[in-house]
Image: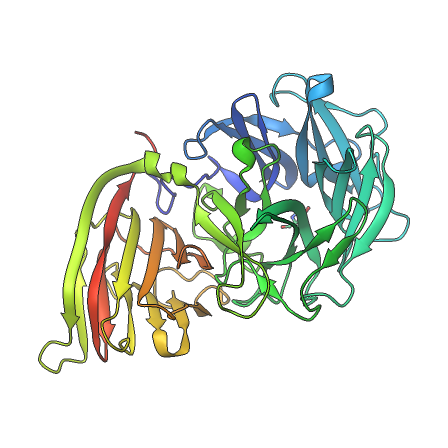
Amino acid sequence: MERFRPEYHFSPEAYILNDPNGLVYYRGEYHLFHQYNIEEQIHWGHAVSQDLVHWVRLPNALFPDEIGQIWSGSAVADEKNHRLAAFFTYSEHRTGRQSQGLAFSYDAGRTWEKHPRNPILTHPEKPDFRDPKVFWHEQTQKWVMVLSGGTEALFYGSDDLENWSYLSSFGKGHGSHAGVWECPDLFPMETDGELCWILIVSINQGSPAGGTGMQYFVGEFDGIQFRNSNPQEEVLWLDYGKDFYAGVTWNHAPGGRRLMIAWADNWQYRDFLPTTPFKGQMSFVRELKLTDGNGRGTGRRLIQEPAEEIKYLHHDAARIAVSSFDQANGEKETVFLLPFTYLSQELELEFYRGGAWPGEFGLKLDYGGGQEFYVSVEPENNRCFVDRTHAGINAHKDFPGRYEGYAGCRGNCLKLRLLLDNSQTELFLNGGETVMSNLIFPEAQKVMINVYMRDGKLEQVKGNVYHLLADS
Ligand code: DQQ
């Protein structure tokens, strides 16, 4: 295994991967296309999976042509015509402008025919006009396309996937505008029998941990216009780590599931990662659900958990149960060591208080040679921190850091789930109400994971740890 290559997160064999593209479920396969930069020629790379956790790399799907490079976009199943339709952005060679292209596949995404009238959609003024996400809008029986148009989302409608008319825009004055909006996605979600629409946008700077990140809006969509249900100044972030970007969801996922994957990276340092011969990897697939505010203000919030298919990767398991985790003889810190030292693991732990919460508790991942990665919870402030400052190779000035998120410690239990995979970490707290995703590059073959606690006592720490392998 090459150094830092993730075991169960998707990564390309070589060259540079970024955004996921064209996510579509079709005839038993989840398709994962992706931005694939091969010596400055930008393609759509391609992989498929039947279970969301074992991916098979396929030959490249879309190639740059005489019009331009192939930037991000989406795909839908056009069942009436027995084909897949892919929408992508041309970064035009001649004009430097962005326009939308269309291609069809009649063999389940293996080969593609570009539309003779490409580009099928242009914009007279906007220099940023990209990342079309197309979906079927059941209520109006039309196809809808949402695009990024600078610092707003633009909506277009179509009856035939080939001719598109402008519907509306959304964004001015809403959410964060610290950077340009990219890779929008719009989809319905139900909670308590109520239908809401979620608009997701990636923002190319100004995220909570710095650099690129993702925000979302909860609102209504009538087939023409999106309306935000929350106060317009409110910013809802999807992930409080540094490495979760350009995430979009699968069209036509079975069972009505809303499944998302993102590029686990940050534009601040994409080209500086210490991995060869590949750069870039995907997040784990997440299932999104909508819930009420979880006691955190009003309004609906997204929660995210790893797709349950992660269980197919479980290899070796161990049960953890420690009662009365107490301060030993006045020592500053109490620790216990978890059993596995694999670089690819899943940890599912529950921390219970008896009386008051301790001042701090969490995980200390010791990779040796002073390389450590921390996850810490400070219950009094309902905060959690992920610290990768000294977790391994810091190949860029914006790489090291300590990032902050919300850790709800209202009840008696805090749930912590950590996916570890060589160079990728994804932390899910309290059933996915907070997620923090971060790359790390420790120079080690194994890791010692300690649960630690300071200032107080925990009634119990229990859960499971798993070794994860993708070849089983
Ligand atoms: N990456 C693509 C663009 C998109 C950006 C180009 C987001 O289409 O806006 O590789 O990472």
